[in-house]
Every structure is written in structure tokens, then in C-alpha cells.
Image (cartoon, rainbow, N blue to C red; front, side):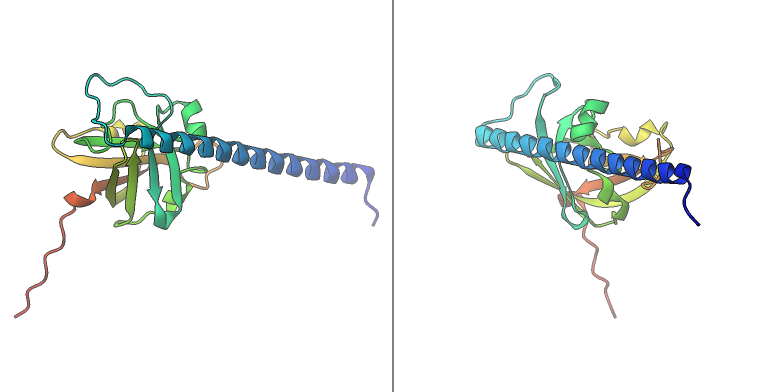
Length: 205
């Protein structure tokens, strides 16, 4: 049976739409990669400039540009961290809450990113995975994932800090494959490696 002109038109329109979507995705991916390469170069320069210099103390102000680099090797998660959780920041980087503790300080270091970009690999996060947070002073802060769970967007308590404890919290939207604005949040919490207590050997006999 021959195709009607309408069916041919619909087929062509569908192919055109598919091509447009693929082109936009490729452009967005390329733009983000270029932005990350530039940010990583800036991050490395900051590390080099600050090497051996004492950290500045005083009231915290928002820093523009990279403040750290996050890596979770097993999950293939990697990205430059910038301060802020606004849409512009999260479009190009992993965002750090302005109210969170700084890496290495006591309190809760809170980072967030989109589930389909920098934090896509978190879907496979497991207890024990190692997280490395490198800062511009040349230090590497290692954490170990202690738990993962899902909460509603109103659960702001996950960002709370304890002045006596160091921890890292990663936040992204959930479910990972949800189309549109996801209704929940996926939370990954980690503890500094030096704070993780080794298991005591089992005594036999």
C-alpha cells in the first residue's frame, strides 16, 4: 500500500525533530565540556598560585570560578565545583551551597548537580565508594560513602551541619530516568576516610 502524502509529511517531520533533538543534545554536551576544560585549567592555576601559602581567614564571601574538583573514580563522576546552587551554576558545574562547610572544615559540605550531567553516575553509588574532593590549596580530602537514600524536595535537613563532625552530602534529582521535573531527591552521604572506623577483627576461640 502506498504511503499517503500526510504519512510522508509526518515521517519527514519526525525525522527532522529527532535530528534537531540530537543536535541540541550534542551542542549542549559540547558546550558543557568546553566550560569544564576552561574551569579545570583555571582550577589548576589556582592550585599552583596558592601552593605553600597559608589559607586566608575571615568572613566567607561567594567566590567566582572553581573552588574544588570532585572525583568518584568507580562511578566515572568528575567535575569542577563552583559556589552556588542557582540554575546558571548547575548548568556548567557542580554547585556548592553557600551555607555549607568548606572542604576540610567541621560541618557538612553540601554539593549538588543535575542527574543527567555531572551526577548521572550516582545511580550506581554504593556504600564504601571513595570520593575525592581536591581544593585550590592543593589538598585532597577523601571521603567514603556511608549511605544513600531518597527524600522529598522539602527535606532541607539533609543540608544541616554538625559542628563536631565532618561530612559530605551530594544531592541530585530522582528518579534518574524520570522525564521532566523529578519529584524526589537522591542523597549520598559520605564521611572523611580518617573518620571511618575500621572493623574490629573477629576473635575466634
